[in-house]
Amino acid sequence: MSLAIVNTYLLTCEGKNLGFVKNGAVGIEGDELVFVGKNSEIDEKDYEKIIDGSDHVTMPGLIDGHIHTGLSLLRGTAQDVPEKEWMNKALGPIARHMQEEDHIAGSRLAVLEALRSGTTTFAEFSVDVESLIEDVYLPFGVRVAAAETINEVVDKKGETYDLERSEEKLQKNERLFEKYKKSETVKPLYGPQALDMVTEETLDEIKKRAEEKERKVHMHVAQGGREREQIKEMYGISTVRKLDEMGLLNENLIAAHCHGTSEKQKKRMVEKGVNVVGCPSSIGMIDGVVPPVKTFLDYGGKAALGTDQTPGNGAHNLFREMRTISLLSKCNERDPTALPAWDVLRSTTTVGSEVLDLKDHIGSLEEGKKADVITIDLKNLNMIPSMTTPFKNIIPNLVYSTTGLEVDNVIVNGKEIMRDCEFLSIDEESVKKEAGQRARKVFEEAEEDWREAGSSMVEYHREGFI
Image (cartoon, rainbow, N blue to C red; front, side):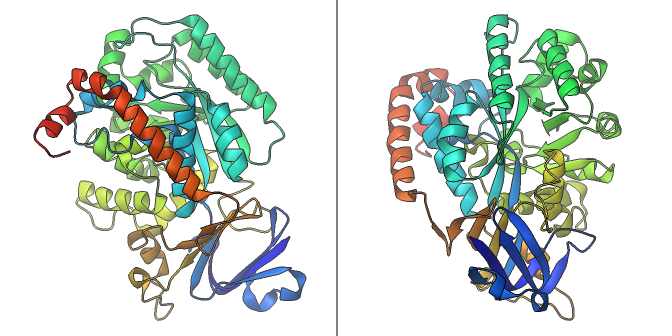
C-alpha cells in the first residue's frame, strides 16, 4: 500500500536546523520514502491512504543504540543498591531462574513498550539472540541490530574461561550473519560482552573477522568499578588502554557506557573513530554517574543513546532518555546550555543510524531511504502551545515535554505497526498477560536465592519499603 502523511510539522532530522518544514508531507511507496517536502508539492491522488498530520510532528523513528530486552520481566528488582551489588547480589539471583521463554516474553513486553514511545530500531544485545529475532523482532515487523553475547567467564572473578563455550557463541554469532545477510530489517553485530568477560584470543579473532568482513563489534566498555578492578588485576592497565594495544579501538567498535574513562582516553577513542552509546537512566541508577555523551560529542565523536535494561533503567523510552541526558549533563557541567535539545534529538536519529552503520537506510526522512516514520500528537496538554513564530518551540518541547505517550502512529519499513495508538497486528493484551504470569513464577522460584544473596534490596524488604 502507498501512504502519505500530509499537513504536518515535518522534522526530517537532516541539516543544521533538523530539516524543519512548517507545512510538510511525506509519501511512502512499499518500504521506501518517495516524497519528503512541502505539503503544496505532494499529489494526494498518488497515494491509496492519507493520514492527516495536522497538529502533529512527523519525524524519523527513534534508534535505541543499546538494549537488553529479555530482562524486562525483572523490572524493579535491582534499583537503589550499591554498584558492586547490582549484578551479583540483586539481579543475578533472580535472573538465573529465567528460562528461554521468559526472556522471549520479556522481550515482547519491552519492544511493545518502546514501540509505543516511538522506537523503531533496536540494538539488541542478548544470549541466544536468534530466538528473540525469530519470536519477537520479525513477527512484530521492527528493525534490529542484533549481537549474540559472547561471554566465556565461568566464575564471578573473571579468572576461569571456557574456550569451548566461547567458540560455540562465536559460531552462533556467525550464523546470524549468514542467516540474515539478505534481511531488510535484521543487521547482525559481533557481541563480546566486555574485556573482563572474554579472552584476548577471542577478541583478536573477533577483531580479525570484523575487519575482514567490514562488520561492527558491539561491546560494553569501561563500565563501572567491577570492570575497572578486574581489568586492573588481569592486565595492570585500563580497559581503554588494553583495547588500544590490541587494535580494537577503531571505527568498527560500538562501545556502550564508557563512563570509566579519563579525558585522555575519551579523546583517544574519538581519534580512533570509536562509536559510543550512552544509557543515562540505567547508568545513573546502577553507577550513580552521568554517561559522557556530551564529552564525546564535544570532541567530535559520535554518541547515540540507549535504554539498556529495565532492572537498571525502569523503562524503554528514548524520549525519557533524551530529557535525562540533557538535564544530567547540564547539572554535571553546571552549564544550562550543555547538550541542547537539537543535539540529543540527533543522537536518537541521524547519529544513532551512523553508530549502527545504518545511515544509508534510516535515521532521517529522505527520499530513497526506508520508511521508518513516527507521528507525535501535539494536542496533548503537555505539548501545548506549539509555535512557529516568532520562533519555533517544537524541538525543545519534543525533548523536554514529551513523555512518549504522544506518539500515535508508528511505521517501520513502510508497514503500519501502530495506528492512532493501537497496534494493528500485535495482541498487546496477551503480551502483557504472559509477561505478568511468567514474572510471578520467576520471582517465586528465585525467592530463596534472592534472600540468601543479601543485597540491599533484601534489607529494604525487611524494612517494608518494597
